Length: 191
Image 1 (tube, rainbow, N blue to C red):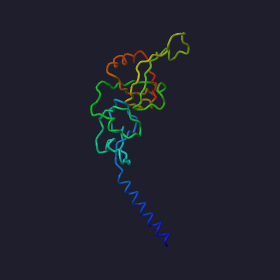
Image 2 (tube, rainbow, N blue to C red):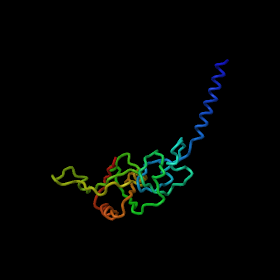
Image 3 (spheres, helix red, strand yellow):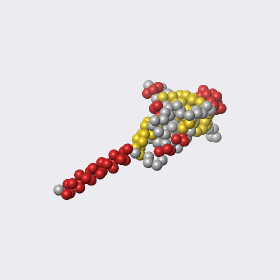
Image 4 (tube, rainbow, N blue to C red):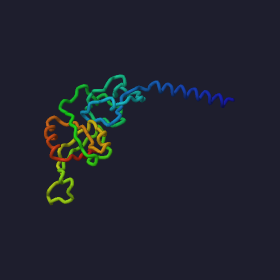
């Protein structure tokens, strides 16, 4: 009888401790996908998460604060809580969104929004050729450290090219667009 009463009391105490700890849970924003520096946050990029942050809650953005349309100023990993210092309300006007069409076979398999890539160009004839003259390079580095803003998979599911929107510094946009007509692009992901 005494043992039964002790077990019932222990279960009530456990329930009280659990309910007190859940009342300290707060809602903060976390990234649903990888977010690269310069990206503008869309509703699909973020989710609200309930977490227990007893002492450092001020370092993260409260779920009540609207962040859609903010600019990322520090890369944020997928499923990472969004730090308050990682976003800015001012959009970097030096970055332009440039779409490129690229064959699905010329991008890493698990490429995603927010990842950083280098863009290499290879001429169509070199791409199809198996032999190469000694000393002649097949590829050329077109641009380095570009952030993937968005990926449109709809065309590739129908057998077409993958359309990837890159965030590109304003001053190199003209040369990148010119190179689109001269080269087939290959994306190489930075780790």
